[in-house]
Length: 415
Image (cartoon, rainbow, N blue to C red; front, side, top):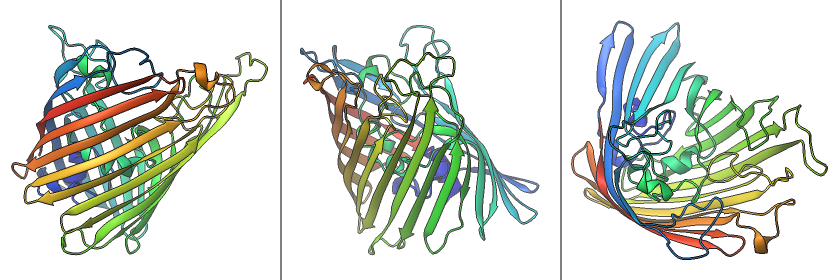
């Protein structure tokens, strides 16, 4: 696969590419033993978010917006990107270094990251998210070792195959003061894979099969901020068929796992009945099929103590008992000449655990779900124009619920 393309879609180590961008070329420079490449994207969207202004709409962890309706000119699921990549062959090893800068078009609060709270006021400026900083070494005969910060393994393919990657998806409550990324289907069918410090090994490609395993920076989970072991992620994938042969079946299947332990700090006075530590784990799996202009994706995950929306967010009750979470999405797209038409539906659910308040009085998230209708038109090999309609619904265990309806119009350019 073309390295320039995978960088342009902010995918890092992704093994598959969105077809509409496959013709895009980066900017190459040969400097001695090094091939240097610059690639990236710029995008902008008009987004109208119709929020739920009714009563009984409070959902802790809900993603549907409430209160005033809003309009914004903003980034979509992808921020803008400028990615530097250099590759070389040295001592029978393929060597790669990547540094990616991800700014956006929206102003952020002082000191906030590019994905932090927005600040649509005079005399402001956007931030920069340096989410990719890594190097690799390896060979096609035995595989590749990666060291640095890059996209994770668990949930990676779910977001890279999400059709809203080129668009907006759910805008959520931040549309009135937008940050430089929307949600897409994050928390609405998959848990966000995130960009994490890691040391990861990926095998060579054996007739379409690859596997990866890595140790990652463990993540804090509420009061559980002590870690004496790394987070571990692993995955395997099998790709089949020729994606360039549109009249024959091609695709991939994959499965990933994640696990980590988190503890209360040793100085913490642990109340009776409260767990001093917990181990949160999850597994996901998916399949993507392509034939004659049609592309379909079926994905699902389940975990306990792994959280929802983002990794290890809302994973346990106040007593440290693990909450079960699961979800998935189904998606179908059909491409006619330069136009791709897509439909998708996804849901993420969170179960109550021991130590949580009874369901009848608990505003904790029960589910976030959304349906998306999207149109993606390849104006040129570099520019895709996008139109999306998104319906989002959040429900709490106590019966509260909120709905959001978003309309997004805009475009994205890859170079």
